Length: 422
Image (cartoon, rainbow, N blue to C red; front, side, top):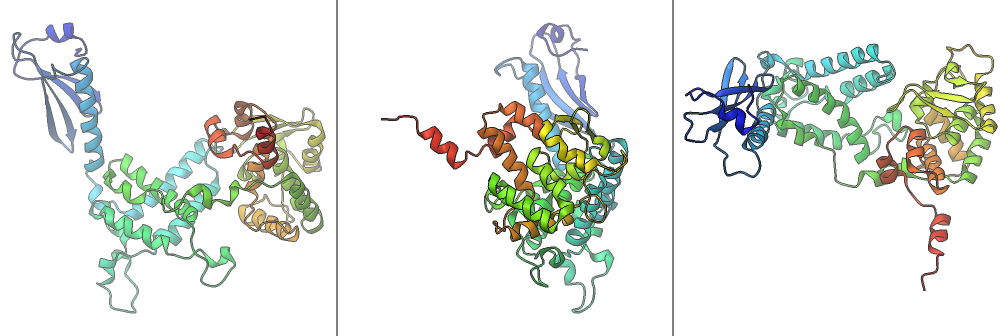
């Protein structure tokens, strides 16, 4: 049956019951034609938990364009609204945050088994650590009142064991504010036993895993999507200004870093030099093996990466020696870049080594290893390389290059403004 043309609707039999056309699973658009003399009316219906809901739209004859297109637009809006506000899983009454976090971690593991390049084990471990430290300990204010002062809150009263359908957006907002005021992990900050103030960037990074877990629950119809506004990114300050990774490290300072690394952290030198040559993300470098570099053709294959994994980068012959030195004496399956203990570089270890070299070189303490990637992309932009070419090398999009990475250096700005204007 067709409803999308006037001729197909004219050919329909006049009857009291509507003619239904399926547009989604358990979602239908309908057209009721009572008699040939009068225009028919449009409607939509949805089946939820064994029940049927119906929405009427009228005849739509006065609308701009074809009535079918308008009816389909109205129906899709109604379907989306229902998906946001109605929990369709019959077992959702027993589904808690604890279950949502568990299922999200299982989904990461399952996806990693299917495509190792997309979801390395680090993503699972980082998400689990954030859940254990930043989600599980939170207790709703209404539940604290049920426990005498000084006593530990029983597990069944913690917010992670309350059914998701019983939690309100205000509960998620309260958790986000608790997270905003929670000091960072003192073991990672290294400042004091109380840690340091959590930045906006840190809050948004910690929100991401929890938001992803709840999105998964919403996609499986165990949670209404009305909670999403409560876990939006914190916009109290521009995120781009709070991220030190947008800092550019001049070539002269990069040479200082490498010189200090040769003196203080010899094992860190190949990893550091690689960042100065190719604009690849730190995590992608850490997961590379010897087999990722073809010494005969100086060809580097970027396997695991945040995006665009599997791309190939041709390294200049002069720089290929640095990658060949990292491969020397190692079997193909061995990590390409290793620390002093022979293990692949991890975020904590490369951060510690970089900070030591940075401080010894007297550079800005806000600089990070990721700044090298941004600096290398900026080098290519200032050299006049096409944005598409840079995007392919960096494993990102042209839009990201233009929006976030195109920063003109002082010399290039002066050169551009030297064009006569008077």
